[in-house]
Image 1 (cartoon, helix red, strand yellow):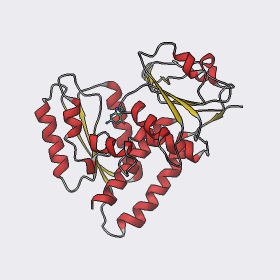
Image 2 (tube, helix red, strand yellow):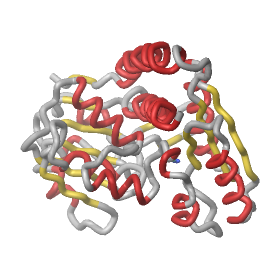
Image 3 (cartoon, rainbow, N blue to C red):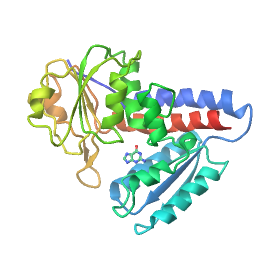
Length: 287
Ligand code: GUN
C-alpha cells in the first residue's frame, strides 16, 4: 500500500497554527499583520503563476503583501533600487525576489543585497551559511516544507539513505543539507545527483528517500525505485493551461513506494505556507 502525503491538508493545519501565533504574538502588541514583499521581474509564465499563488495565500490568511512587478529589461541598478527600498521600509517584514532572473542580471549580486533579516526565502549567503552551520536562520521554503512534511507524518529519516536529484539553490542544495544535518529531523545519508550524474538509476534503486527537483515531467519511474521507498516530488511542470505534472511518474511508483507526494497538492502547498511561516518569523524577530 502506498500512502499519499497530503500537502494541502498539512498546510491547512499549519495555517491554523500561524493564525493562532498572529493573534497571540503579533496582534496583542500591535495591530499590523505580517507584511510580505515580492519583487517579480519579467513575464515568465511559471513565475507569474507562483507569485499569484503566493499572493492568494497571503490574502487567504490575512497577511499584507506588496508586489513590485518590473519589466523584463529592468537593469540590475533598477532591481537593486527596489531591493534597497524594501530593505529600508519598516512596514515590510520580509521579502523575496522571484527566480529565475533574466540573464543580464547577476543573480548572486541581487540575492546578496537583500537584508538577511528580511530574507524570507533564505537564499542570502548569510542564511545559507547559518543553515550549514546548524544555526538559526531562514530555511528555504521548499526544503523546510519537505522536512516539516516528513516530521508531521512521523517518517523516520535518521539513518536512511536519501537521494536528492537536482542541485539548485532553491531546492536541491538546501534539502540535502537539512536531510543530513545532525538534528532530530536529519541524520540521513545523502547522495546528490544532477544532470552530470551517470546512471542515476544505480543511485535511486538504493534510495530509501528520493527528493526529485529537476523540472522534467515523469522523470522518476517505478522501475527506478526500491520497494517501500519514500518519494518526494518537487516538480511542477505545466503541460498546458490546466494540466500540471510532477517530476515523478505517479502511476508507476504508486503501489511500489511506501509514501509519495502528489502533484498538485503535495510539496507545493507546503512551500507556500512555509514562506508565510518565515515571514511571520521575520515579523517576530524584526519588530
Ligand atoms: N522560483 C521557484 N521557486 C522559488 C522560490 O521558492 N523562491 C523564489 N524567490 N523564486 C522561486
